[in-house]
Amino acid sequence: MHWMSIGLIIFAYLLGSLSSAIIVCKLMGLADPRNEGSGNPGATNVLRIGGKKAAAITLLGDMLKGLLPVLLAHALMVNDTVIAAVGAAAFVGHLYPVFFRFQGGKGVATMLGVLFGFHWGVGLATALSWLLMAKVFKISSLSALIATLLAPVYVWKIMGMIPALLITTTLMTMVLYWRHRTNIVRLIKGDEGSIKKPSPQ
Image (cartoon, rainbow, N blue to C red):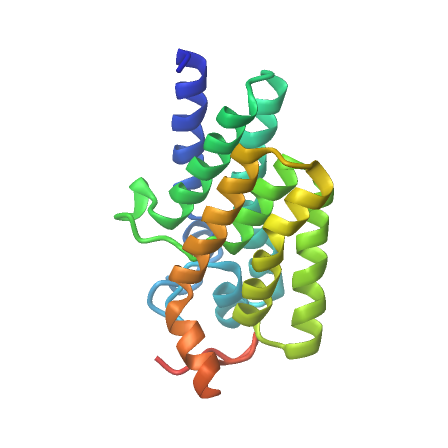
């Protein structure tokens, strides 16, 4: 692999490792999201403990972590395999951030940013799916699980059969499901909290 491609992947991981939730909460004088609410350093938990403004900034930050490295990879005209690897690296950085003892979020917003980087239509379709499900069910985790389950289908339908991007999107979805395993158990039991009310720990 070319040195530029390796550099892009490393950059994507390091950028992904910047936890927007922790940084935003610290700058805004809020409690550490790892110790409050659901304990997850993500936009939904920041909404619970800090309100809409803090959550919006966190969401934007997490999405940009996924989007910007992929856009840079496109600009440098690397191949689809490298673009896929860059997106995956940003996603992994969010899940296991080197700057925060490898304790990261669940990856929904960063995955969404990566998908927008792959193709704006894929990102938009996934985002609209999340919004529709959130409006219907009022449960963030369920909305994310449904939207990301559809993401590989959107990649295939909108971009065609590009193996590297399709496989990477499918793997991100699988990892995201694993990260949401406790949420899935609570959903089955009917104990999962709403977007505004955290689940019992």
